[in-house]
Length: 103
Image (cartoon, rainbow, N blue to C red; front, top):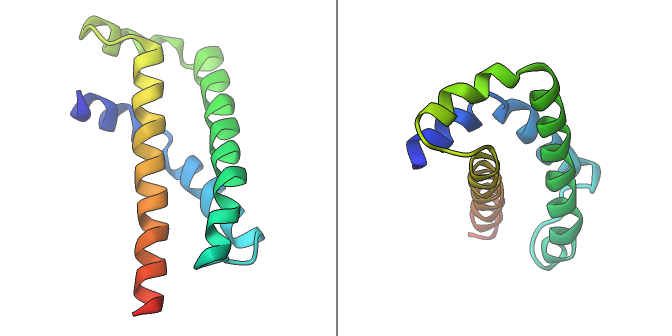
């Protein structure tokens, strides 16, 4: 399942990462305790960006879903898995940056 989600996520990873890191930079690069205050807004920013991706993929790239559906994966399962993977990668990266700066 993870390899299928990774294959699906690779189609739009650049956009989601640009939005996430851009939101973090717009918030003036908070780290430490200030990062926890930004967790909620960053979550909703990522959620909204996935909504935009879903809309554009559903409108303009519907035929790409057939590949995943033929393998037995539903569209909601793919998006939930990709959202979880995106959250893990982004907030894991933030935690790593925070740890490296505090060391």
